[in-house]
Image (cartoon, rainbow, N blue to C red; front, side):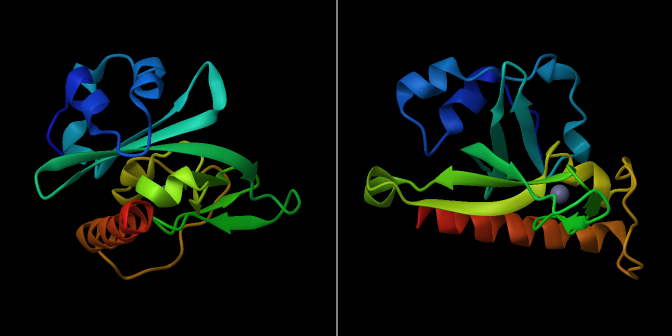
Length: 165
Ligand SMILES: [Zn+2]
């Protein structure tokens, strides 16, 4: 994705009030982020571990979504879970259920959409082989990194559709 500034990122959130957007802790060192390797910018709020954020570029526009980390997907120490965006499997704690409040009237009525995501939101780096899941085994896939990236983006866009439709 294109490098984004703090202003761009704050302006991109679709499911937060203006007050909430002001209080979001953005990642430090935005200028030094590996933007070329990112399908989306994702981060956890270091001061509030239950908050996570995801900013994607779609059709040239940034779309930011605030997420609430509701639980780890762990069902035991040895169980593995899969991220629904990048399909990386992790051992306990590497994947968490994150929910996004839907936009508009649906959101005002309290509707949200949940997805199991890599807890560090580093899907883009896993699909490019730049980061390995701790204790996780890569599924033996014949897809190239480009194909995996395309699949991650398709999964991401369908998630964004569910949040904003
Ligand atoms: Zn992932």
